[in-house]
Image 1: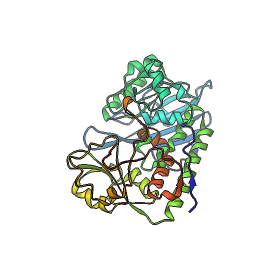
Image 2 (image 1 turned 135 degrees about the horizontal axis):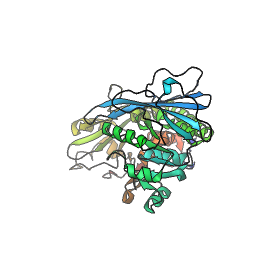
Image 3 (image 1 turned 135 degrees about the vertical axis):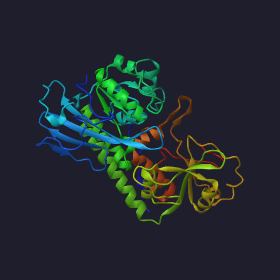
Image 4 (image 1 turned 90 degrees about the vertical axis):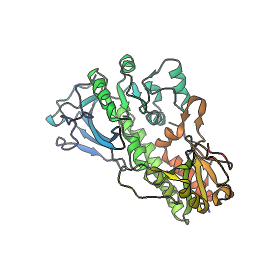
Length: 399
């Protein structure tokens, strides 16, 4: 069967007022009616962003879930207005009163998300970064500049609200802010009061992996790289379509995606964008489970649930940066997937000393590379390209 050529060689590429993410809706936060006369820029897969062009300005509305500090999430939404740099500020209609205004193209960018760093890298504009979460970037150039103090550190979104002192000192044209908690919404509002333009980001919350990647077009619009972003996303989309077609022509391969979490616990991928990647690669996920919209892609399962699936699976993705090996390998050594040796981990692109894991950075932006890896693991005859994120594991390896 003809093999599909890979794409892994491609290069990795002040606020006017408050708007959104507060406890109560404000003018400019409403994701409902917009002024007449606008033209929508269609997004084919992204569900947490929409873009409308008007004479003299562009409206970007974003929305997504934010952890509420307990087990659930609450929806947040926000509206920003993009105005060309140097152009007079347009007279905004009442429907956009209070919306955040950002001058474009943005020349300096701050972020508290490693994935957003990767989006900028793919667009070739990582040199515009003036603040990042910390030293966990897989991009060595970014890490080197951060270590040298050229790039500030605001703290990663999963730890705490951003360090606003750093943002005030660095004066970014925009802060791409991912909120790790509902409590961080107050920091977003305070940043805007301090004159720091903020765009909340929800790329990683998209229900489809192509929806995540399509945020390239949002960032391209911000940075004056719209044509480049559209072209790159078009290539990603085309590659995904080709891989899906090839995989769908073959019988599905039974697969298990579960890594050990210590004792008798396993973290299993059962649904969501990750589960869809497995299915589109021609895999039959033996632990697939239904779930309502917004449910986590993975669940904690017992060894008793994993063992029958592992004995049936032809391929087992059991390596992960978070894996904590089980107490004993005795139960695993006789299983079909283990004996067959088709064991994989998502740890091919890691820098443990820097605590940098590209699976959670470029892996979000380039689902075509992730899907290609899965197709190669499940149907080796279809892909003539090296693995990017996956790597074969020896029995007993978990990272």
